[in-house]
Image (cartoon, rainbow, N blue to C red; front, top):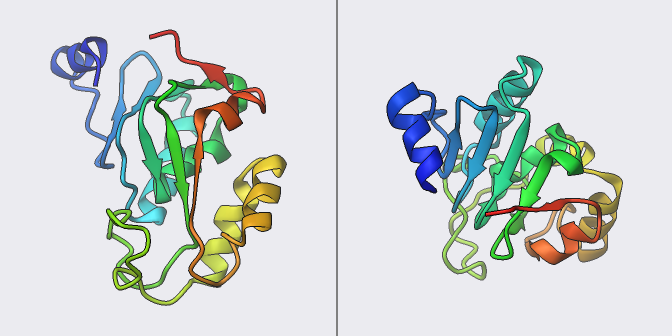
Length: 166
């Protein structure tokens, strides 16, 4: 987290959204830095609430944004999301069991997840921009298997997402 985000947290007490790796600043900037994801429903509720209430105007993704964290792509347009060169998004289907489990350290370890939740997966999938839906479909990620995909900042930049200035 950068000094500005830390200062916002300390001075304004605006930084505890209860989502791992996500900091909400009082300035309407959502700072995402190494979020392993977690409960997709908690991320969805928080993002929807913040955007509907105009508490989040922009998001900055500086490192890892995986699993439930990726739903920010459903709530803000590309011009309101910037990515640093180290930013990357990790995608996989939604699972019924262990919804609070973070993205695994080794993506080949399938023991951390339960059965695919087809309705949750479809809802998450349909919220993404069309280019991303196509990319995930081609990779088999949002189907009902074990596929996972990591996409780096350059692919998002090619689709109109901004570079973070710091």
